[in-house]
Amino acid sequence: MSNAPEAHALLEEIFRDALAAVDAEATVARAVTRTPEGVFVAGRRLAGPRVFVLAVGKAAVPMAKAAAEKYGGDFDGILLAPTGYLEQVRGFASLEGSHPLPSTANVRATTKIAEKVLELEEEDMFLALISGGTSALLCLPAKGVSLQRKIMLTEELLAHPAAGSRGRADDARVITGNV
Image (cartoon, rainbow, N blue to C red):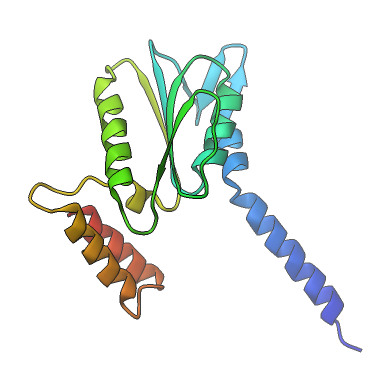
């Protein structure tokens, strides 16, 4: 007899454990702690006259939910998620953009985020929660580069036979992030 059922069960358990380990909402919930002394992120107290939380990417909504639940206080937040991923989260203005190709919606959202960040003072707290898809969602073409040109370049890079490889995807982000 074969050990196939046992092997299958073990593989399923490993797969479920791996998914749980990278669950965006759980990861943020583990990183953000609330005590009687305040809210801490990686040991640093989340305090200041203003707290701004930015959540961007395909996991923006679950990350924002965890941050809002753990923080619990007054904060200003923006979440930017791809079309089909967007939900309203307490404390966050919810913005939607396209992925993997940038769009005018991405440029508008990125402009709003940049304006908000530029309003922050040195003593304010800024928490950035970043996940996959951010390199397409945050889009402000470089001076002299049109959005259409950036879209065409991204399409060309994604159409390359090696576009699915990790190295090629990293190369594409570097190239499109600089135009």
